Length: 181
Image 1 (spheres, rainbow, N blue to C red):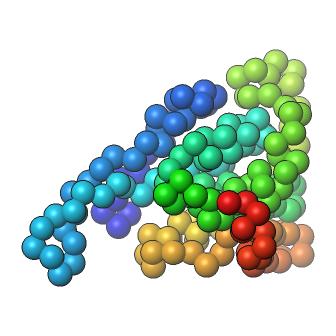
Image 2 (image 1 turned 60 degrees about the vertical axis):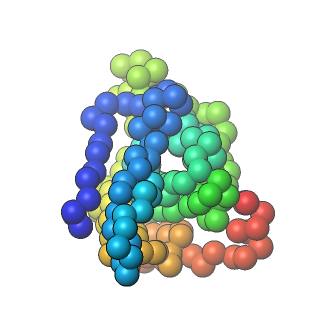
Image 3 (image 1 turned 90 degrees about the horizontal axis):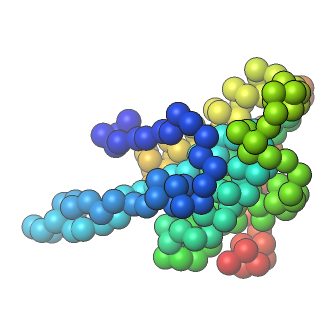
């Protein structure tokens, strides 16, 4: 899309060092509009947290704060409701808080990585409707599209309910943004 490369990892990432390595931006030589020379610039890295457990969110949260530059979009949903949060770090500063600040309960030690589950534990899961999964995915795609097509996304947080057919962007409060930095 947009002439950009994308990557995904088809296995569980449960190690901080591995995740940090995957998110390290390469530097690209790009032609600056109006200039006759190329500029060395870091590539844009977006971490999409499409995980079904808080232990993985905690890993992403820690790595977010270790990153100089990172957009971290996390989506989560239950059977009929869910949320998507877009955290942004630029120059080592947090401009918009990640999921763990917006919903601190995800940072509580309550579950395990998928590979740590027994067969019995893995077979018991919280029900999710197809509509809730599709809604969460659509919001993530919308955020990414806006970032890539327009250079920004004005929405940092969305909650939704597929039972009431309601998708609600939440406005970022200045006070909350300062607190997260």
